[in-house]
Amino acid sequence: MSAVLGAERPQVVSHVQQALSYTVFDCKWVPRSARLLCLGSAARGTGVLQLYELNGARLQLLREIEKPKPIKCGTFGATSLQQRYLATGDFDGNLNIWNLEAPEIPVYSVKGHKEIINSIDGVGGLGIGEGAPEIVTGSRDGTVKVWDPRQNDIPVANMESVQGESKRDCWTVAFGNAYNLEERVVCAGYDNGDIKLFDLKTMSLRWETNIKNGVCSVEFDRKDINMNKLVATSLEGKFHVFDMRTQHPTKGFAYVSEKAQKSTIWQVRHLPQNRDIFMTSGGSGSLHLWKYEYPAQRSKKDSEGCEMGVAGSLSLLQNVTLSTQPISSLDWSPDKTGLCVCGAYDQTVRVLIVTKLNKI
Image (cartoon, rainbow, N blue to C red; front, side):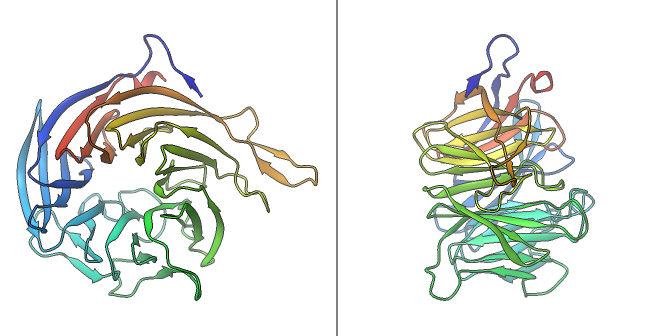
């Protein structure tokens, strides 16, 4: 790992801090707006959905809605830019889709899982990714399910442990490879360190590995391109960057790993405007900004003539400590480069500005 020095280093500036009266689990920018959402759990065990608008140097609360169950995660990934509907997963295993203009009753609701939905992702919306709008949910019940919100109650795909295998808690899910109408994959990370790549075109397990520690977050650098890179973060402060272009028949995908800190890396989020820059958030209340550098050649032939990938290297662009508590959620603005929101277990949401990203 190398560090970027000198005047060209990006700076992470805390622009606004907003204290909350509940535990925040997820934060999301509303696409094409200066608004953001906070999702979480009130002290009395109900769910909270708050909508804020960034107004200069302050956050103005526009709406607060209470729901029966705590809300763990949300995504806009399967909605159109016109509707901007939010899909959420809650502590009771419910998948709901909300119209934020009238959020009292969900426009779509299904009891998706037997236990908490830990993670959610969407694809086919917002003009990103080819094909049907779909939502993927990963749950403590061990299953990963893909939903088409245009169809009722039944998932279009259900990935679960085979008979005889003990079920593992799925902590994180992400879509990728949605570069045409047919191709699409889901990556899932589990509490025992398993990472599984499911091919939705062939309905088969395409690849699996184990990184020896619980997988907290997985994300492709882009959902809507031929698989390029995948970052997976873990409990013990380590993360892996896999080069997903070349799959070796026995060795799988080449990767580079980095120990960012001693505590859990809760989230990874790639910069929407530059897929080689990403941010990780940590259990120590810190953020690390990274840049991936490609090798001169991304593949080579092994002794038997099989193509195998070559991993690149990582540069630490900047790191900053914002809180004494874990930063559990992170989201870049899709519209304004460097604008970022994060939520921490100190019951605070922070809007950040990361400078000089266009100069890297």
